[in-house]
Length: 242
View 1 (cartoon, rainbow, N blue to C red):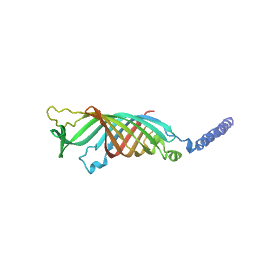
View 2 (view 1 turned 120 degrees about the vertical axis):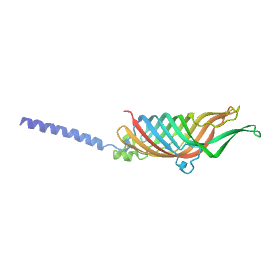
View 3 (view 1 turned 120 degrees about the horizontal axis):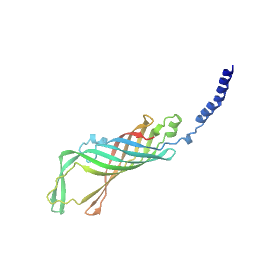
View 4 (view 1 turned 90 degrees about the horizontal axis):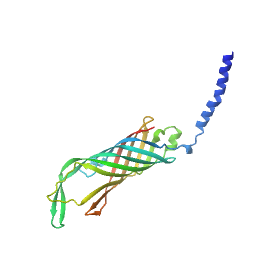
């Protein structure tokens, strides 16, 4: 009898505790939901879909990236991300020969439109990316926002510098290259979707379209120029540190 009484008292004491927990969970308001701050390592594959229509172009057809990233919450549904890593690219470049032009008094490069070769580059890339997860609060009500899963809009700004390139144009004797390369900037408004796989891993798919700015100097004078605007499809996988 005493044992039964103890069990009944224990159950009665536990009911308010469970009830309080349930009420607390259900009392969460949409305005209280916030995205997470994350950091980890990521790998990406970037592809330019226009390359299927014109394979002989000066832009990267496929680029692979691996590096570290940090995504900091700056508002309930917005983050600011930072990243740094290495990017390897493959593209086709025309075989170019440089000859002296007596009219201009300089060297001019001529490429054969029928003669292209595959080129590999390896570079350093650093970036900053503000993001808005616009449907976050609606998904949070259904408990579907692990690792900030959902649709997003972003404005990634990246700086890159090519450390190695297999592209070697043919220069004439005594040729002096007066152009100095300082890297490039890209800005691509992007729409994408993120989905968590486990508590530490997520994948993303996104599409962006923007332009690039090549940085360099010619004859000792800073001479940046805007490159062609290009679309970009991106697949990304990341592992989050806990």
